[in-house]
Length: 344
Ligand code: ASP
Image (cartoon, rainbow, N blue to C red; front, side, top):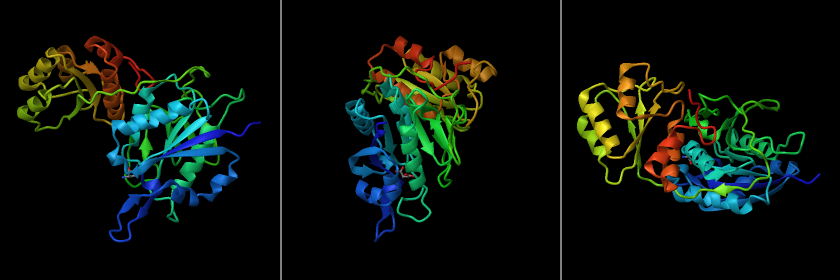
């Protein structure tokens, strides 16, 4: 049996950080520091290579250029490795996982993103376990020798989640991520229990097609009682704006006031695509349950069903980045591209 070949892409994040002697603030450090703190990795009988971002970043500095860099590394090494582990800060991990899921078309190998809440050099770190479990998942094969995980996923503490279904839910809990609308792909306890029903099962062996381009002409608009007409109109008249993720209340509801609905309708008539995503952690937009949601759909707002905000905004940027027409973008937003939502 050949050793599993895994490529680690180290982008930064708390997992590799050390304390600045002067300020006591955490700052990213290089890959050798990180690996020196996990000697147990050598106990895995894997062939492991790495690629490090220069410099490693705090993921609050994450950008489209970084996503393109990650995708380029995966693309260029796709046939050489059995799986990929991306070490990443937790703050924007769910955005990166979503973005990569839309970029990596035809993916049939594991891309496991992980990080930690405590730096790997700290005694009580969660980073060591997360890194080792992520490597094991990236190397896992089924009875026919095919990868168990064939999608972009986030491994954190006790769970493996679908990347584009995940959100960061805690700033200090070791179980920092959750997917409220989709089951865990695996539970991590004494063993790693995969949920074979929940895992994506694309055919293996096909080519990877990376869609690199994004279009940043999008905005996220969060509703709150007190939102003014001036703010709403200002956002909707942003020069060049093509799409808006509208974060609504409950089952997809918004104010019913004429000034609000008119502003949304006029933006849609100007060609702006508006996608309705709920502010709730759990559940789906059900546009016609209340008059307020119904007014939005009559105005032309699309339902995002149970998509996360992270997946919605990255999906929009990816679709516009492909140079698709307005109607093609609308059509693609109505259906799942890679398991990111459930259409009711
Ligand atoms: N600020 C850090 C980052 O996202 C937080 C973390 O890694 O947990 O890079």
